[in-house]
Image (cartoon, rainbow, N blue to C red; front, side, top):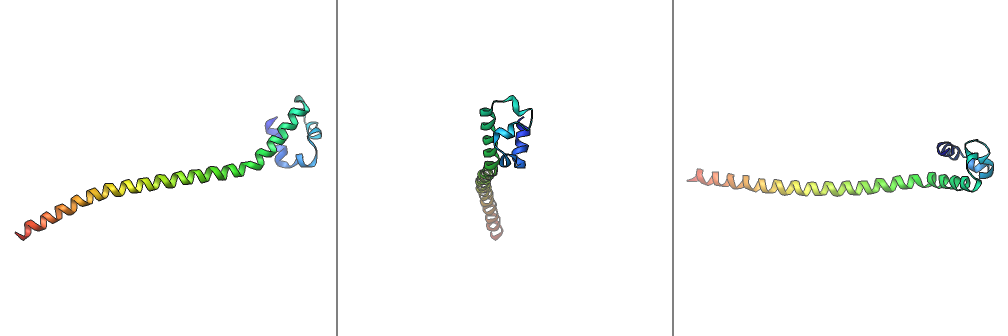
Length: 101
């Protein structure tokens, strides 16, 4: 019944008729009391209205988390390479000094 209601709300049937009439369109809906069915219609309506916002919010949070992780990885990489780079420069300097002597 949940999937059928989701399809009906997506198709806009909840706009054409009140929950009382919508409940009578399918035998699966009649298993529930009018109060319960009405609550589920409104809940599904809210769900479909709010879902794009939830997806957008989820994507923004994920992008923030990803950017933060990238910055941390870049700083770790720079620190590791700076340490290695300094050692290489010291070796080059000592090689130059030994050639001069």
